[in-house]
Length: 114
Length: 111
Image (cartoon, rainbow over all chains, first blue to last red; front, side):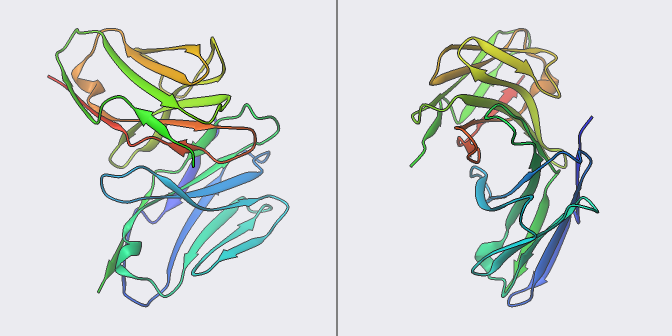
């Protein structure tokens, strides 16, 4: 079945450094890739998403890149801050109708050290 | 702003009990989902529903059932709770081609 792999499972960076999380997906028909951030004890919240007709998308310190040929997509966080510490989930889905399920990666626990 | 409300944040039940987890969304979304979240395993889909009275199995449906009698409400049912169903349960809803919105989660302990 479809699956999404995510690496690394844990990541520690110094405040101000960049963090990169990488995901690969198996379903070549996937065309929508959201990223969620889950702080401790809170719900996952969407931070950025990208569709397959775009190779890169940026929102302030956060960017996502997509390589459809290789079935890879990555999250880049620049100038990390302690409040970026959380678990990050990538996901992939086929948006062909409003009825569709989303496959999540296992998550990356990011720690930003002050 | 989308609001997805789960009826309980914490729940403790006993082995063999029938357990109901309730989820309500206020945005008239067609799609609703139940996930289970365990450390190192991410979010695993149990069931989802794309319309009233419609349901589809996710990746780990065994031991669970669901009910969607009204568009805004999606219930997860543990027919006979077992200790291996101790977990965090997350409900989500989605309208059209929009991202999913999650509830706060229910931390369920089965003793």
